[in-house]
Length: 542
Image 1: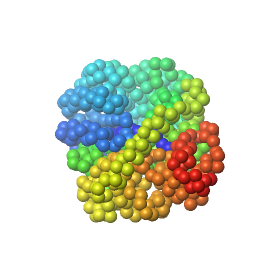
Image 2: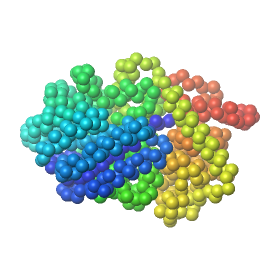
Image 3: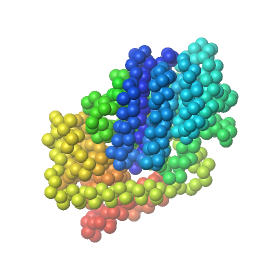
Image 4: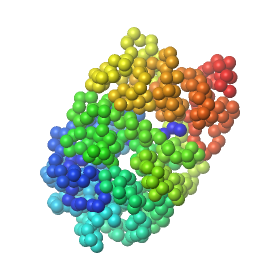
């Protein structure tokens, strides 16, 4: 199935030092005492590189930047006096230049050592009212607020004092303790303190979360909690999951709540880049080689090394996704739960699915639509496919030599020097720099290359990537890469055990696109076969 992913999410950690010691934290414990600080040069260069990456990957359209720690206010106040207004100006320019809906999220535990931070945040919120969100956590059973919630009054006092920032979000990590307290506790405690938005996160097994995961609640508990909370909130307070779902169910696009973003990269205080912000220390998702924000080939290396995470975001490992009308945009629900162990799945997987379908159905009823209108999005992907097809013909007719992957098996740096946009690529069997065929195709697709499909390419592709690779082709998760539809169909149907082969055969035998499950791309692919192929060849597929 197609997955509409388009978000560049970047987490920047200028420091990992923290002034609290919670029982549960995704940050590796040894980092929370590390006094290392990001230099101003690295910090500002990071935004240059974010923009470079945004322009290099032709499939992303939105930018989200999270500033987090540790605790951000453990940095010197003077650092942020210089750099926070600079950051907001820079991101405002992205919004104007690229319509990227660029937003900056300031994540904090609200236990400030320097009261000057309250004044700074108020000034920034007043000067950039649409530019900065305050993001504060609520995890009641982590001992974050000490015995008898001793630090909670200080937390609430700071929250009440930050009046200049228009959007103040409470992030509730859903645990059994949250369910026990009930949604009324959130309403009674945090709305009087100035919270304007509530979102709900899930526990996931990173850092101390591996042992803490036993306190997770089920998907059904989460759905019911959110529905009950939604009924209690005044119109002046948003509930982010519902707001996002209500917007996304109209077009089945632009949904980021469950973490299925194109990128979720982390920039450490040193400037090192990793590829899943939820994993730190030894658990980090590293690239093939260490990647630093100052690397001259930063954009290409980031796109390349992010592809395993991107492929995971596209996967929907649950049987119920196959029959769900929201799967196109939900992409299998919680990104961090797609690789849970069977024991962990048993804790959470009842009462609802990982994508919280009960909430999607509620959102659809709330907006009063019968079916989503994907026409604008499908037209955009079709335009991209046309651009790719024209580029492929141009490359095949040019005299330029193709880039041969076989020449770069042991040449990592040279690969990124030679593999430029608008190159024709000859692929080699097996992995290249620890990336398989599915992942490398995502890389080539993003930067504007085409692959040479001469000879036995399609049968090789079936051996190298199996049904998953062909599913990405048929359902247009590769937007710009151009393939021969007849050869694709032939290889799919030559593997009758594939579910994709059964789906395609059903469409070719007269199936109609009338079910709630959105398989628009499959029907368009089948229509392409009948239009582009000779009659006798087309009939052979029926």
